[in-house]
Length: 140
Image (tube, rainbow, N blue to C red):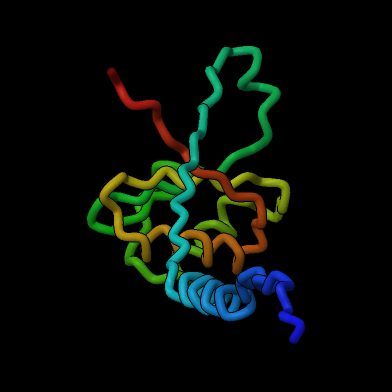
């Protein structure tokens, strides 16, 4: 009688990674779909310092002031009413047929967003595509 004394081969334990990868992908997709990407962009505008010589070289400007309660003034002349049509007519008159004019929106910090959008819409209707905003640096 011959006895079989061969060593029993122990099988190496095998880790199956496919279910693990599946779970990670599901978690990744869930996080991608549930994350809200809110990015607040902050505009830092530096206003130019005005010298007498430099002021003559600057392009012609129309300054539209927007008060906190929504009243408008075009080049320091108050606009009667708050409609976009009246504002567009005032801007057209102030531009005097020159599309190279730059519209500077000088809005109060507490002015309604709709008031500023109305100025932008009126400038578009008046054929004045060049817009900029006037800001001031905060005092320390």
